[in-house]
Length: 269
Length: 94
Image 1 (cartoon, rainbow over the protein chains, first blue to last red):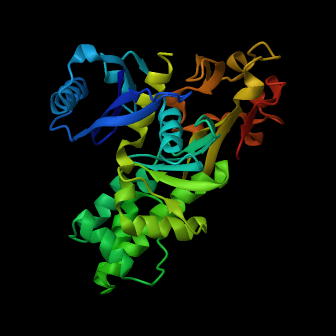
Image 2: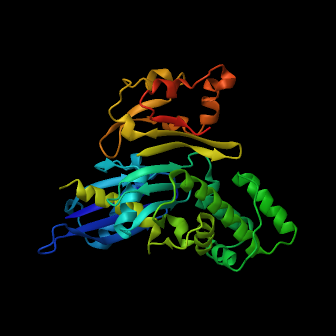
Image 3: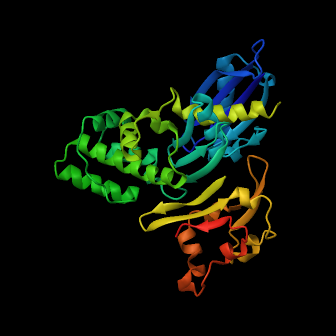
């Protein structure tokens, strides 16, 4: 059986096709990711973006639409996936996906382009506590992206640069707009780019950490969402949360879509 | 599940927490729906098929302003929503 999970994020569409594999003698079915496809929509038509991303994933996997038994959507734009059978919240999908990747995970930190959230999960991947920031993007990826632009660095260079700094420069501005002027002031005071990059990522991490602390840091921590690709942020988050290890999936941006496809499969039984 | 709706910004931390375990079998006959002067609460079926209250999406970005009228400065000694919710499922972080 194949199910699909579509994560309609604010910046990109993630599609995962999940295949259920029955192993002889096993009580529980196993699941394998058949195809993961990411698309950055060229325009603002979310309906068309979801359709195009799903069609591309099917074509790449060599799967026909009829073979997909159920399609679940998640993410900020889940309501715009008209062909989805059901929608689940980002918290439910993120918790399920994170526990699928790391069964020992109990605290999930999800940092995407526009929103960050902390989720506490039980061993079955059920969200038992969550907190997000529904107003401000300063604790999310778009803030880091805006600051990297101000520093004239690519996002990759930005993350790597912060790892070369051992300075802690506090950023006082809570808002992306004001923080940018703080970054400009640091540039004008000849502060090295790597120190500014670290200051920005420390600030994002501290805001994310404040949300995670609302739900409480328990057990193993796993980071999901696109910011997982930023090594500087991972380091800053580890320091802010005061944990030895942050588990990082290979494809952090696809974890919610995986969770979504898993829930779709589980509801077929 | 404890669902925290709201945000943190430069002026403070504004979250309304709803303990859905206390909310599922509401002993207060969903009094929160009518107690809130801004009608911020709504009953939804969550992802685990439980009927629970949540804070309407359009309200979660303005809690500091929308709830201000029910705080002591607005003449209230206790919050109408938390008072109406006798199971104690609703809490304000500020």
